[in-house]
Amino acid sequence: MSVLLRQFPTILNPHFMAAFVAVVMSLVSSISAVAGPWSVVKVNGREYVTDENVNSFYKFERFAKEESDRVFRHPSLIMSWKTGSQAIYINNIKFNLSFPIVEQGGKAMISIVDLAKLVDPVLRPSYIKKPISFDAVVIDAGHGAHDSGAKGVKGYEKNYTLDLSRKLEAELKARGFKTVMTRSTDVFLTLGQRVAIANKTKNAIFVSIHFNSSGTKTANGIETYSLAPQGTSSTNGGSPWSSFLNGNIRDKENIALATSVHAHVVHEFKSIDRGIKRARFNVLRGINKPAILFEGGFITNPTEGAKIDDDAHRLRLAASIATAIQKFKGAVGKKKR
Image 1: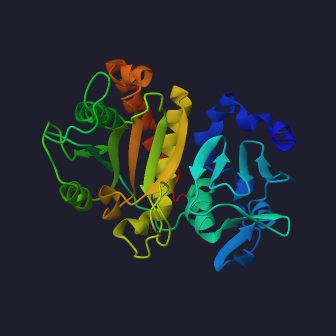
Image 2: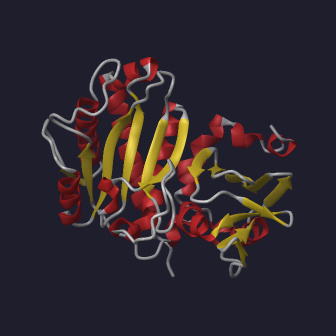
């Protein structure tokens, strides 16, 4: 650990996570003021913004740098970068970037794509322009029927996703939301059918429920996906995608929704944080509303799989996701212009 990070122990303090969703999803006024225009720097044909420009724009109270580390600090929010890394941390939550942090002339720089499509909507969700006004949630229980999904230590993914989706439906209804289930029984739906159900549902967001698997039994933790922006690669590899997809209309809301759900679950369950990631899953590509795919842990891990198999654990997970969705609704697009 560098000297710089030791100067800010709250970055690594799990108790500091308690403030994350409340603060980040309703940005404090001292950061929200716009300080001026971005100063764009081109590196190898790609546009970047410097660490100093980011610091001045968001008016962080303290900015420190040492070798490859950069830390931006507000009393209730800390963001850390490392040059060469393709991930940043905001209040100890991991965000996977589309492009690595680069260094030039002693300054660390973040790509304009990541700044506009990740950092800004996470730090200032209330500034998202023309967000959807929703009162409904489309809940997509992954897999079904002959498509059993992954086989875990105690059961199949399709059964866990359906049960969690039913519990999430009840939790959301108790909070005043309308709900639509892509499937409420053990049936098979194509990805196209799931997208069609979502797109015809008015005033809604979309949450696809899955559980993870790995050939390595030690793999564990929570990860959450939103659609990769145009011109970027998926977190897990592949070539950059130049075409604009239907789901890219909601890029900023997608990442804000993913942040709320992911951070809330990771904090509440003290889970391993595998990060908020980007992918072009077919079930996200054609969605015309804010959409995420949530991976609620590894059913192939003996310890985590046993928890997922527990009914009480899934009920807590459903309540956590529902609360996060409620916070997302209360935070996005509320800034008066």
